[in-house]
Image: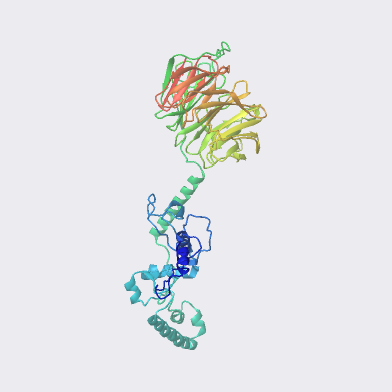
Length: 574
């Protein structure tokens, strides 16, 4: 409209140029209006991106950062959930973030030793300038020297000493070479006066006095005894005491002879119901009990009071003989096939072979390690072969006639707990603290079967079923597992006996003579009986105060069971 109005005014003929003042028209743009605010903001953003520090947690950068940006310190408020303000992702040390620095070993040692000696050191993070950390007063005093930079006065001192040495060297040239070479001469001492022994003449060592000799002999003897004790078990004087009326009866029969009328009445076993007798004589806990083979008219017990006792079962029910030959508690015992001899293994690292009748020690064996289990080979022609599972992971085999070690089975990774003969005594199974079972061919130290599963626990007691087809293993996870003795030694998953609490205790598991019942003590003093076929708990007996560690079924009397515990008692149940 302004343009039209201007145009119409110019075309008016009545108007004269003199009558109207000149008019200045404002410039007009035909381009549309554009808002440049966003453009300015984007330019400012690009500039801020180039100057701001990089977020240390981001993994991708969409521009080329400068050196200053890459190495800029972390800005912003402290992290609310971190102790010192550093986010967890920024930590590479338990005290925060440690910056890597490439320092030569020599430079590091120089600054480290300087700080230890003078109390100051160069700041490794300083890029340039007079940057030190530590005692600045000492820094001023020592003129910032390091331990490897010798101060001026020290250099002068060393020059003077070197000059003196050179002068002494000229004097040495005048000395007799033979005297200089002889360490006993004064000339040698003068030449080597800088040695720690300068000025001291050392003659031949004087002879020891009588008192010193005596002390040296006693010390050597003591050391030898300690070394010997470490290699072998502790030596103890063996003693035995007979508590019966007479060792032989009027017919001349020994007191260990089984009664002639001792035989099984029938083959069917029954669960005992009541306590019929208690043997008390051990002053500490009883660790194991064994009935006399075949007849069961005597029962042998191993005590933690270092004694082994044998008790009468059929007649008087009293202790018949005490065997004293160990200096520490007795861990395990084992009868020979005829019962005339037995083995005992003690924590004093000794295995002793006893004559049951006379109480004399026939022989003693030791490897310097604690035997956890001892076993005689059940074959009649191998009754002289002893197997012992030791605390040093080995099973050691002795020939007792020769007294020599004939074989070592060394494959286990923990102390050996049990040895059980299977397959007509051609093989034996061992268990260990390494939570595995290993099967060995007798006489060959190579494992023929290795059983170890992630779910397995240590098995401190294993017993063979009367039909010789199954093994019952007391597992430390409060259950009894059954393994086949056939070629594969497989776990029978259908048979599992549980309910008792034995974790932490080596409670012995056993079978009734007819194989119908499985029974075991537990950590709370009870004896548990399970039915072999149904795997159900048949009965429990409250037997002992504390742990019921061992239980044995009488070989002939089908309803009688003996138990032993850490209360020092042996109880007989019917």
